[in-house]
Each structure stands twice: as structure tokens, then as C-alpha cells.
Image 1 (cartoon, rainbow, N blue to C red):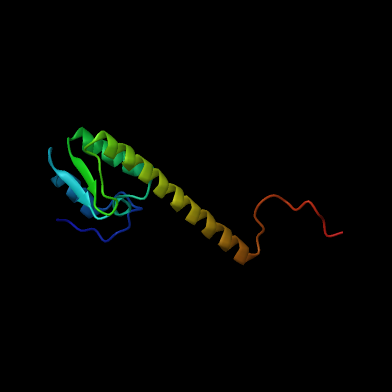
Image 2 (spheres, rainbow, N blue to C red):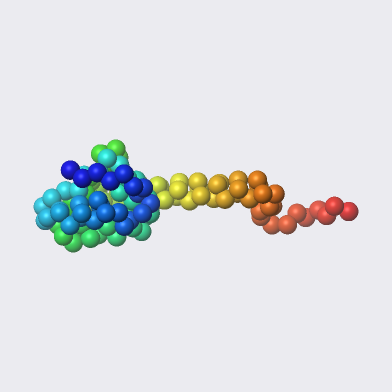
Length: 115
């Protein structure tokens, strides 16, 4: 069992790399949550594709999700897309909140002028 305390946002984590090196054909990578493995949809799809090419399964306990069946792979892709969508919403809200705090108006110019 390997444990990584770093964020799932960064794909280049030492413990993750050690785990991927350790896995062999027929093994299954089990993670507590899909988001702990990766928050980027592209990174996650790339990682799962690499695992599949090596005949390694994937299982996420929190989402009760695996990639060893066709249905599991479909559900996996839907969950991954939803997670990335939520992450983008959070990033946009944060950006808008910071801009509002600085007094910067976002969006198109107002149709009314001060005159």
C-alpha cells in the first residue's frame, strides 16, 4: 500500500510514480477517490489508458467505480467529466470573486453611461 499526501491536481507525484512502476499485469490500482488520483480529466484518461495497455485495472472506492467492464468505463468517463466541470466552476467563481474584490468589472460593458 502506498499513500500520497499531495494534491490530485499534480500528475507528477513521487508516490504515484512508484505505485505505477510497481503494478504488474493483472493487478488493480485501488484509490480511495478518483479525485485523489487526478483532478484533470485529460491526465486521468491518459493514466487509465496507460493502465489498460498494461492490463492493469482501476477501482475507486468512494465512487464505487471500476474500469474492468464496459459499463464501468462508461460511468468512469461520465464521473471524470463531471469532476472537471465542477473544478472549472470553482476556478471561475474564485477568479470572479478576486476581480470583484479588486474592483475590476467583469463581463461586457454596461449599456448605460453615467451621463
